[in-house]
Length: 322
Ligand code: AMP
Image 1 (cartoon, rainbow, N blue to C red):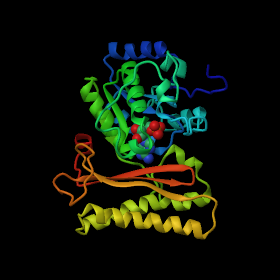
Image 2: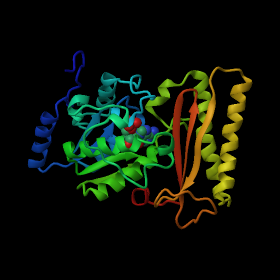
Image 3: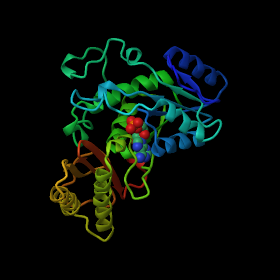
């Protein structure tokens, strides 16, 4: 199954769910705890930080690498999403011996035994939907995205049966959706949310950053700049959400105009920049309550690449709130 893949010593690589389960069952019998990191592969330091965090809290760490068709729309990048298994395994091995115990890379056929159509109206089978948290923010541009995410994460929680699971704050709405799903479906797992890992200049690490041309990479920085400008304004006393959004959006507009001026053949385009309650993701359209705090989140197209990022303001314990 893994032709031409050199499996680093100490890491168990599984393709079949049953084989993974047999390995996991033995851990349970040996009273060893398991921390789980779900990924789509093309690993970077953001993913590796989740693995390290999992190893701090659990005896063993398992990852899944699965580019989940159910969370892509027919017009998105399922076919071109980077698939870099050898490099992923090498990066995990480079973390040191005994950090990653197992990696499950299942087939689409086994994960979706009834098949999986990208067109939701043609789908058959079992899907999980977290109502109330899935249709705002990311859900406006990607209406079926969180249904795909919740479905695959619930499948994987059933398969992996970890004591603890680790997600990145980079995908803050995903954290809110999964947290609600774990609560509502009574998955016996503790959820951990780890801080966003960034490049030196502030760009949030993402597997999709690989799509950016050198020119686009320069302009991608505006996403972080917009958020950190909002953060500074907030800390200097500006708590009026629309004013904060205007300040951030102005920077993105400047970048858009600059790209146009330079006659580049792609665009910077703001998808959304929003300030929301950490409790229920409702939009804050007036003054931010400092007791409650808020999530500032944005999605910006830089060329065809859609970059997302966020920051939490006065949200003290992200694992509790989101
Ligand atoms: P993905 O492979 O993009 O689906 O991401 C797998 C997990 O890694 C998710 O929980 C993401 O939130 C997390 N993740 C992705 N990028 C980062 C980052 N820059 N910092 C921290 N976690 C991240």
